Length: 105
Image (cartoon, rainbow, N blue to C red; front, side):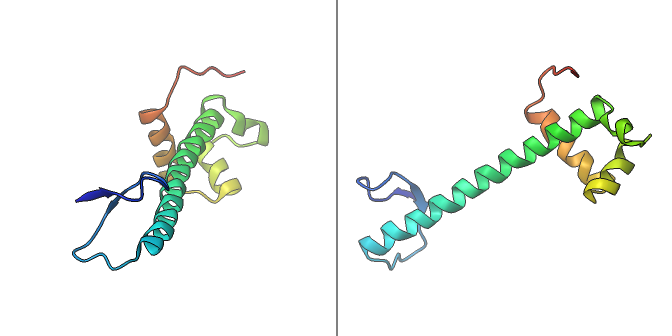
């Protein structure tokens, strides 16, 4: 179902429906839009992992205590308006896909 479109422009795999209706120029322009969306999705994935890393570091290194908090999740709620479950999901995403044996400095 995937098709490589316009090899002279950029190779991009696109899934077409039953009857593609675009001209070659329209298809070329549409491929640019698809590339933008794919790049946006990849950036979002990267940012989620970065956020998880930073939150995990604040927790692991107990940085929240510098600001007078005894509880990491209370610190996140007060400063970032992130719930305990949201913080946990971001940290778990980082731990699952990117965790390295980092140490506090």
